[in-house]
Every structure is written in C-alpha cells, then in structure tokens.
Length: 469
Ligand code: ARG
Image (tube, rainbow, N blue to C red; front, top):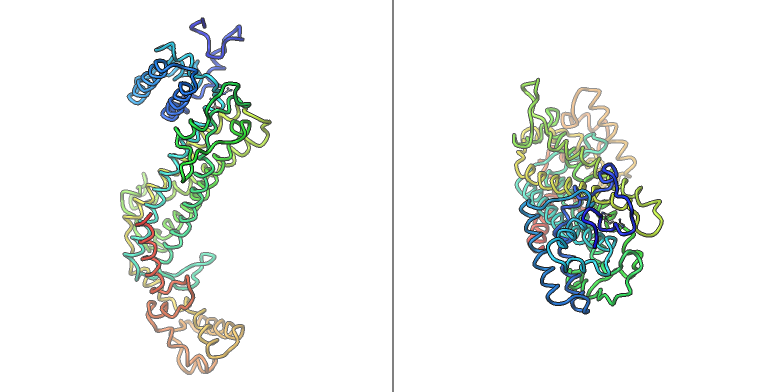
C-alpha cells in the first residue's frame, strides 16, 4: 500500500519534494480548467478498458459514478485542489482512488503525457469553435454598420495622407474579408487539432491491447465521415505542440487585424478626424481633464495584441530546443494558450459590442470628402480616356494641383481660362470635380472597387453567406 503522504509516482523515491519545489512544479492553479476534458478522456479510457477486459463492468460503473460526482464538485467549487498532487490529472485521479479502489485501475496503459495532450486537444477544439462564432458575430456587426452607412463617403488614406474617395462601407468590408481568412485559418487549426493522442502511453505505446480507435470515436476525434482520427506515431503524439502553435499564430493574426481596426476607430474618434463617436459605454474619462472621452477599449485591444503575439513567440522558443519526446517544459504551453484564447475571446466580443454602437458623424465626413484633391487620380484617368498617355496625364494633373495650391484655390475653383492655360483637354473632363461623391464613385469600373453598386452587392453577398453559415 502506498503511504498516504506519498505522491502518485512516489514508489521509487525516498524523500518528498519540498514546498518550494511543489510551488514551482504545480500546474493545477492554471490547468484545473481542463477538468471537464480530463474527466471526459478518463471516461472514454475506462470504457475501453472494460471493453478489452482489463476492468469489470462493476469497476467501470464505480469509476463513472465517482468521476461524474467529482466533476459536479469541481463545478460547484467544492473540490479541494492539492498542490502536492501537481496537476489536474493527479488531483482527479487521487480523489477518484480515495472514493473507490477501482480508481487504482484507471491509469492502466495511460501516461499523463498522452493524457495531457488529449485534454489540450479536446479543450482547444471547443475553444476554436467559439472563436469562430465570435468572428462571425463581428463580421455581422461590421456588415450592419456598413449597410446603415452605405452612402457615407470618406477619404481613403495611404501613408495616412488623403488619397482617394471610398465609402465607410467599403472600408469595413475590407475587415470582413480579413476576418474571413482568420476564420479559415481556424478551420485549419481545428483540423490538425482533431487527432487523438490517447493510447500512445508515455512515448512508446503499450503492451496492453488498448483499443485506440474506440477511444478516438468516443471522444469525437473523427472526420466528417465519422472515421476515427488517431495520431499515428506515439512519440509525435506526446511531444509536439504544433497544434497549439498554429492556433496561437492564427490568433496573433486575428489580433493584429483587430488592432488595426482599433487604430482606425481611435483616429476617427479624435477631434482631428471626428468621423465617428464611440458610445460612452466603451470609453472612459480622465481623472484630471474633465472634457476627455478616451477610447480605452480600442486602445486595450491594440495593446493586448502585444501579449498575443508574445505568447506565440514564447511557445515557439519553448519548443525549439526540446529533445524528443515529452519534457516538462511542455507544461508551459498552457498559460500561453489560455492567455491568448481568453484575451482574444474578450477582444472579439467587446469589439462587436462597441462597433454596434458607434455613431457616424456624417457632416465631418462630408467636409473631408469635399477636398477635390481626392479626385486627382480620377482626373488623370479621364485625361487618359481623352487619349493622353498616363504619364503625361499624371504630370498635367500634378501641375494643376501645384498651380491651385500656389494661387490659394482648390481645383474646383479654377476658371476655364486657367484650365485652358494648363491644358485645353481639362475643359472636357473637369466636370467630374463637381459630381457628387456617389455619382463619381459610380464611375469606378473595376471589380472590388468602392463603386456603391458593387459595395451594395458585396453587402448582400456577405449577408447571405453569413446567414447560411
Ligand atoms: N502537468 C503536466 C503538463 O502539463 C502533465 C504531464 C506530466 N508528465 C510528466 N511526465 N511529468 O505537461
């Protein structure tokens, strides 16, 4: 019989780890959140042990009953976590064994190495699905804002300098596209996570006739046709964490996209732009300056992107020097994964809330869009249609812009006489400077441009697509 005070692996040891070592090595304070997945894995494993005759039906039902009772206790915060039992796996197993002698048989043919890899994969599969839903929700919100403001035109910027006219809807649809790719990166991430490591043992499988296929099916590690998916190499199963790396990488990119959107919102809500107003709920005041309304949520989303990128780097560095197979370093994967998942989940959720409540300030947008220099490129294109080579057209419009600037006018204020002097062909095309932004954007012919007709089609296409997904 094992002495009560001994650790589960204590057989070959004469002394116990001291307090400092326990505190250093324990992981239950952060891996306890895997409890549901750990119990699910154990239930499947026990069922399989019964199937191959290594435990009796009675032992199985004892194990099942007590594991479920433990799960309830954890859920209701009645479970006593013990640091000397290191992690979620040993805490649950020890409690099971305290309740029933059948508990001593649960770990047959299993190692914490394949167990933890299984738990992580089960956890991540659920998490990925919920991130995908949040991405969809954010896309829907962006679409709603686009639809509501489809006739709001704003300057598009390159180098943060006014470039050409676009619409707010077109701008937001760009993010819908980015999020589409984020969504499909998560699909891939789910796909490579959806393989079952259980039955790989510590690293070299087992001499016991474990039915890995049965367990994989029980745990839902199956493809679309319902065929079980097993990690085929036992060493690979316990040593790699590339499925986590890929999730962290996909998430880092999503966070970068959110961060850029955050930056747009921060700029647009400044007095200098004043294109939008963020709702009071998603802004905060200053402790000193009474007039301030700060876009803290957007700033924090931008700021938190740093830690999400950091988590990816951190895990890559943890992995890079590891010899095969399991090494305790791998325990460090958890906080990186959980932190990224928690951070991004909150950011995606809050972003959708925040965007659904933004108010667009149409007057400042109209004033900004009134700048005729935004039409300089279209003016050059119009000269091209009058058979002037593009390089010459570019130069002519450039000279007109410079001339207007020096004479303290805008392009729109130049007289026919002045256009005539600059180049007579201007007289045939200058009317485009007085068109409404809507009319003027209607002249865009290329697919993917901010032509309002095309933008409207895009909104409808996305609305349909999201409804059916
Ligand atoms: N807490 C450990 C982890 O998260 C579980 C696996 C421990 N395995 C071992 N051989 N010490 O990685």
